[in-house]
Each structure stands twice: as structure tokens, then as C-alpha cells.
Length: 341
Ligand SMILES: [Zn+2]
Image: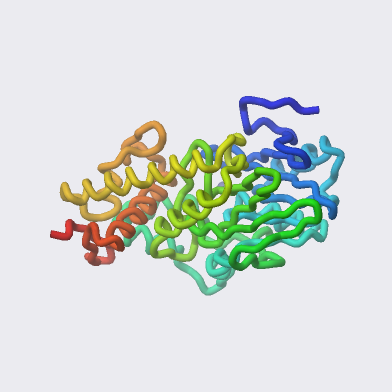
């Protein structure tokens, strides 16, 4: 028997609704602390939403948490993975192969998966994106996160099934609406159990942090536009309990979507004002904006967060340019933004 806890990362299998448990699994990087895997009981066995990052600590915690529910990994019938990021996908892939449980992933993530498996790819596409953001000074710091030689992809193979468009997944007594929600990545899906009042939200809607936008190997032109569209899509669904991939379960998907929309509206306006006062590249503009919940300066961000900040700001500026609120041109490989008048 488990009782609720204030620390959502505490190991265990925590009940969230009849037949649904949340299993937090550890991550090797300290930023996000943990990822939630959701175990859904169906007539046909266990269906899992996400699988965690394939590292030994996560594997053993996965096994012991399943055991506390009276299950083993061999009881898993299927993995529905919200998106291709390694903290969600890799362990689903490894365990899925071992126990014969098929893994599903959104087809919007296929171009990025193809790129990751491209043996002829020798330049990290993120370096091109840093150049476009006017942030090539971050390239050395970025390289420290990415091995010079491509790592083996043996825990990152292709899924068994690509999810395409919105569809209903019939699990006998339970029905999941698989809803395509591009933005965080192009292939992101959320899974809604409307009858049960549950939204398995992946990284599309997170309770305490704002999801990164378009951080994926394949370049996306307007990830923020896509994210807004996907937020509106979830807002048009019934208000559901929010079951996020990172963070505690909260009561209202609508309330958090509204906060995320307000956040990006504010950032758009701040970015526009920064361009108005003379900032030109995404990296310049990032220097004018506050970062993280703690309102940090751009200079105080670690090398990984600095890269995310550059990409995030670029996404805001590209959307403002698309909306005709600022002008955009290329200057020495960097996107340069100015006022329209
Ligand atoms: Zn994640």
C-alpha cells in the first residue's frame, strides 16, 4: 500500500486513478530529476505510457516498482511513447524488445529518428541552429554534451508502430484518444482517457516548468506556432486531470494550458520589445529576457540551458516575424530581426 507524497520523484508505484499508477524513474541529468511512467491496467494486460531513460538505475527502479504492484516487466503488452526524447523512449524500446511489447511513437518524430540513424551525418544539426540564432559562441560548450563520435544506437532503434494523426486506441474497457500535439517535438502525442477524466500529457503540458519547444534533431521552422496550436487542441478537450511526464499530478489540464499560453504571450511581447530597443539576433534578445522561474540572466545559465534559451528565443522571434510584427533577414548566417516600420 502506498500513500501520497510531497516529493513526486520518490520511488514507488503511486496510484492516481482506478487501474492507473505513476512510476517515477531517475534520470542521469539533475535538471528534470525524474520522468513519470504510467502503468494502465486493461483487459488485455498492462499498457505503459512512456518508458524512462535506459540506464541501470532506472531499470532496477522500474522492476522494483512494478513488483510492488504484483507485476513484472513481462506483463507489459504495449508501450505508448509520447515523443522521441531519450528520457521517454529508450527504455521503452529496450524493454519492449525484451518482452515482446510493441512500441508506438508519433510519425512526426520520424524525420528526427531518421537523422539520428543517418550514418553519413557528420555535423551536429544543432550547430547550424546555433549559427542561425547568432549564438555560435555556445558551440564549444555544446560540443561538451555531444560525443565526438556517434554513440551506438542500440537502445534507440525504430518503433514497431508509427502513430499518425488523431486516433482512438481501444483497450477493451478503456479507450484512449491519441492526440497529435506537435510543438515540444513534431511527433509528440498526448493520450486522453476522457471517461476516466485523465490526460497523459507527456511533455506537452508540464505542471511547474514550461516545456522546451522544438528541441529535436530535425530543424523545425515554427515550433512555437505548432505548440500554440496543440495547446488550443488540448484546451478544446474536456478539462482533465493532468498526468505529466515530469512533476506531480495536478487537477486541471485547462488551468495549466492557460498558464502556458499566458507565459508565451508574455515572452513574445518581451521579445518584440527587445527587438524594438535594438537587439537583433535571438542570442541578443535572450540577453534582454529573464530566464527560468528564478529570473536568471542569460550569462548565469549553464551551457546546456544557454543553448535551450537561444533556440527558445529564436522560436519566439520566428513566430513574431511570421505574424508580421517584426522583420527578418539573414546576416552572415544568423537571422537578424528589426522593427517593421
Ligand atoms: Zn521529457
